[in-house]
Length: 184
Image (cartoon, rainbow, N blue to C red; front, side):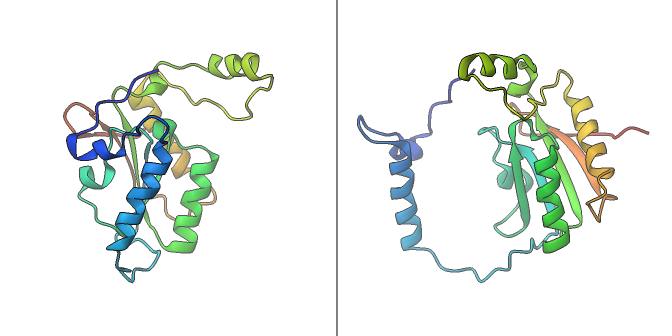
């Protein structure tokens, strides 16, 4: 679908050599990280009592974009940042077991789901012989899909806190968030 952007110079040590895997490089990077790691003594409950749902797109550095530190929020990501049953599952656990009260939903410009259709599932079925049980959740209108995601959170019977749910579109070119107003 798309190719990765070139790695910045400080990240080139993660690019595998021939015969080496990215996973091996990541494990080695983890060893370096762990060597200087000190347990911050944090609780699993987010300090800001917020859960952020966003697309898995590698161009979005959520913590930097939102000014968040380790321990501030729960971060839940999937393709498109759409609210699926699994997102509701994670939000329910986040709220009921770990005390979050606010939900921030973030879609973004240039999302790969803007170019897909549910035909993707049919193509997979033809390729592998089995139709996926999940929906692609593709969309053509970013704002409308953010509104739909807001509505799915606000109407979920499993969620305790649905009064502070806000949705945004992140512009991958400028880094700015644009708020999307819900219906009515």
